[in-house]
Image 1 (cartoon, rainbow, N blue to C red):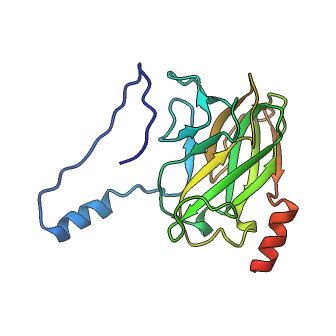
Image 2 (cartoon, one colour):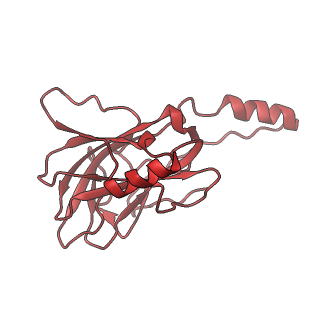
Length: 205
């Protein structure tokens, strides 16, 4: 059904419903059991919520409060699970993370229902602060004319390239801000369009 990371000491639990009925009633039951919230709401406090990595790895299970992602290779990537939501319902994505990296640019991609995969033009690049402080990066995806229709999933590249001993702590990727205690974080608003991407968007509009 999906790609997962299974640690040697993990307990992987899941549930399912078996329905023996007519096709019409099976469809009714499936519709009834659909998740109430389809928009992105991923918190990495105790698990990975079905995210997996390429050119990166975390420190393994158990997970305590956030993922510590080791980004020691070129082009580290985090892939989110498949979903299905309207772009207009999640125009802004909030990424809460703390960086210890040399590279200071991150990217977030999106996959649409009519364009499988992650085309290079379907992304927003934004600057990050690499001082180990947790910040909430507010990335306005709606600034891109290509962020529209049905969105299937997200891909987060925490840095464009990593280095030996570098890591990123990722707490959440969500369509709404975290409720962090007042005074515990600095917030960086990211309008989210580098000049070359903005020029492309202007042409497309």
